[in-house]
Length: 301
Image 1 (cartoon, one colour):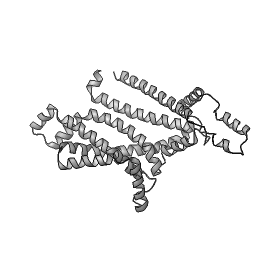
Image 2 (tube, helix red, strand yellow):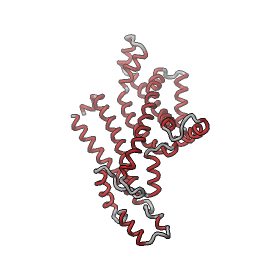
Image 3 (cartoon, helix red, strand yellow):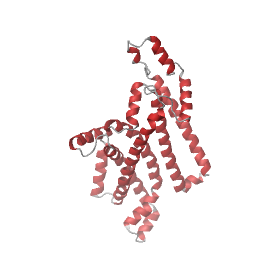
Image 4 (spheres, helix red, strand yellow):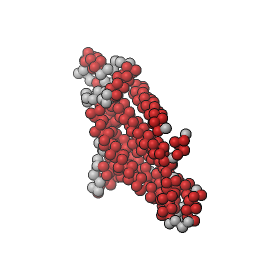
């Protein structure tokens, strides 16, 4: 059963990656201009030189030919040759990918370590003044865009020197609070739904303490929805980190991706999109495996 489950998920993931990579190439093709557009405005470059560069970079090939070349290069781990840097894209991407993953993992761990106990605590005290205050605070945080939060923290970091600009703590202080309100709301709602089960009322009737009741009985019952939420939070944080990295100066994939889009460096753009889709797929696959082992109904179907 597990082999069939994994095979089915791997086929879905492969189709997703092919669709994402093909779609990114198509969008890049539809965008006006290419890497040599600005070079054509330089009077010092002769038409013969531009034609030679056009041929060497492979810009004279059709879109399917360029895509198949990149796909073959991606299977070898190179992801093509960067137009601007004249080196394999993998050399540029992998160090920055490690920085992006470090930022995402740290922010994810911090957000969940705060949201999980707070969400259970708010559900256990539903309707209290502190619960209403927490709901109000999460609504306020949800209304603040990540860009505004990042700019505000940059101003604080520049004036107080509490956080180093371009450092990991500053980037985490933007990403974690941005994802915290959504996590809190879903955890609170999932735990409240699970708390209405009949066996929870029976456990309370047997005199089990409230702390043990909520964390040993109610929280595991809500794990199905929380595991799905975990997969979604990985995807959300990874996509949000690209923008945050540009604003706070963290040396991840975000600044490289923005530079590549501005320069029409197609292979870097395609490589960043492809790797980001890979890690999103891995996060969703991990959530699916946790659901597979945690929910017998999935194994039965």
